[in-house]
Amino acid sequence: MLLFSVFTPSQAAVSRQTDAQVWQFTAAPEKAAYEAGEEIRIKAALTNVSFASLQDAEIWMYFEKSNTYLVSGDVWYALDVLETGKTWDRTFNLFENTDNQAAGERLKTALGEKPGGMLARILQFFGNLFSNLSPFLRHVEDRWKTAFDDVPESFAGLFLPHRCRQVGACKVSYGGQEIGCTFYLRYRQTKVPAPAAAVKAGDKEGANALCAVLTPSADSISGAVFGAEFTDGGFEGGFFFLNEAENLAGLARMENGAPQFLAVKYADLTPGEEYPVKVLYDGSRLIAWLYNDPLDPDPYPLFDVPFVSDKTGYGICGEAKDVTLAGAAAAAEGETYQNPLYPNSADPFVLYEDGVYYLYATNNGEGFNAAISTDLVHWTDIGQVAFRADIVGDNNFWAPEVYKYNGRFYLFYSAEGHLAVAGADSPAGPFVKTADTWLLERDAIDGHVFFDDDGRIWLYLVHFDSGNHIWVYELNDDLVSVKPGSGVKLTFPEGWEGRINEGPTVLKHNGTYYLTYSGDDYQTVNYAVAYMTSQSPTGPFTRYVGNPMLRPDTFIHGTGHHCFTTSPDGSEMFIVYHCHNTLAEVHPRALCIDRVKFVPQPDGTDRLVAYGPTTTPQPMPK
Image (tube, rainbow, N blue to C red):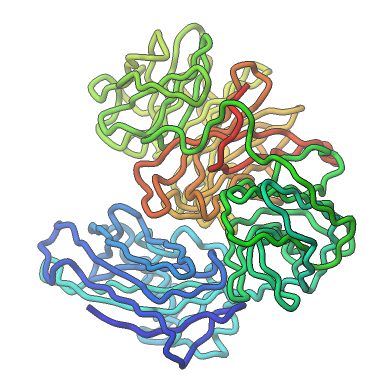
C-alpha cells in the first residue's frame, strides 16, 4: 500500500498544514497482476478527514495504460463526498474500454503543442479523462477552473474557484502491461462568510417553535439557532441560516466553531430586506420555514430533517426583530409514511388505473417487474410483467414507462442503450414487442411520452453526445413510430449538472410546459431533479434559477429520475423518485415520494416547489 500525507482544510478554505493533523491516503490492487479482460479490484481509503463543509471536498480517480483506458465497471467514474470526521473506504471494480482512446493526442495535435510540453501534458491529462468517462467527463462546464500541484501558481491563477490535487496512486499489471491508477482530491476554494454574533433568546423543553424576522447581511450569515449552547457571541448546536451572498438557505450543526452543513437550498434573498422565519424543533426533528414569497402565504417548509442535540438553548444570529418562543407539536398527526418506501425501484414510473397505482422500475435484468398500491405508500410485488423473450433487447433493461392509449397499454423502455415499445391489454402485462426493431436507430434512453391537449404526442428522450442530452420527437398516431425529421435537441448540460441531463418528464400547467429532468451522474451523492420552462413543447426552454428543485442532503443521497402522480383523491401532487440504497451504497436504489405544488409568480410562470426530500414521518397521501 502507498501512504500519502497531504493537507487539511482550515475553517473557511483548504490549505496545507505542517502539524501532525494530516490526511492519510492508501490505495492498493487486490493482486499485483491481472489477465486481459479480467475484472480489476482496487481498494482505496482516506482517514483523518477534517472538512469544514460537506460538499467542499470530493475524491476522484482515473485509470490509464498504454493504448487504452480503464473505466469503473460499477460507478462509470468515481465521486465520493467526504464528510467531517468520517473515514472513506471503498473498493472499485474496473473493466477495459478502448473507445476514443486517442482523444487527448488529437486535441494536443490540433493545438500544435509539442509532446512533453506543459500544455501538452495538461491537455493529455484532460483528454484521457474525457475519453473514458473518468472523473471530469460529466463535470465539464466549470471543471476547467482547476489547478494541479505541478502547475505554476501564475498558471493556476487562471483556474478558480476550484482546485484539485493528486493524493495517491498505485500500479498493477494488466495483460502484461502496466496500469496507473491515480486518485485526486477536489475541493472548493470559496470562502464562506462567518455567522453573525449569536444572541440567546431562551431555553425551552419539549416541542418548541422559534419565530423571528431576519434581515440578511452581505458580509455575514444570519439565522435561527436551536438545540444550542451559547458562549461569548458564539454557539454550539443547530443553525438555520440565510446566506444572502449566495442566495442560499441551509441547515448546519456548529461544532468547534465550524459549520457542518446538513442541507442547503436556493433562496431568493436581498440585503436589507426583512424575512420571517420559523423553526420547529422537538428534540429529534427539525422543521424550518422561510417566508420570502408574498404570493405563497403558506409555504412548504424548506427543511424537514432528523436532528438531535443534548443542548436546549434558542437564539438568533444577525439583525432580527420580533423574536418569540412558543410551544408547538412537530409530529404529523394520524397515519404517516417515511421514505424510502420500497426497495429495488430505480427510475420509477407510476401509472394510476382504476383506483390502483402500478409501479414500474429498473429492477430486473430479464425484463421488468411491477408492484401495485392503492395509497402510494404500501406496495405489493405482482411479479414480472415484461419478459426478455417477448420484447426487444437482451440486456440493460432500464427506465420503463407505461401509458394507456386507445384501450391498450404501451411500455416504453430502454435496452442496450436504445428505446423500444411493447404493448399489453392490461397494466399488469404481459407486454409483448410491437416491432422487432428499436423505436429509433440512434442510441437513446429514458423515453417519456407527453400527450398534449391539441392531440399531438411528443416523445422526450436522452441521446448520448459527449454526455447525456434531452431531445424531443413527435410520435405518430399509432404511438409506436416517430415522425421523420421531427427531432429537436432541447438541452445542453450546464454547471452543477456536469454533462448529464436525463430522465425527462413534462408537465403542462397554465399553458406553460415544465420539462423536469435529473442532472449529474446517478451514482453521485449530488444527483438531483431540476426543471426548465417553455411556451412550446419543442422549446426553447429556460432553466429555473433555483435549480435543483429537489436536491439531496446528508440524510438521503442520489435523489433523481422521477415521475409525477396525484393522491388517491386527486387533491395533492406527488413527485415519485429514487434514492441511493444507503448513504454508503448506491444500489439497489429505493422508492421515495414527496409533495409538490405550483406557486404563483409575478411574471406569470408559476414556480414548481417540492416538499423534500424527506426522511421524517409525513402525512399519508389524501
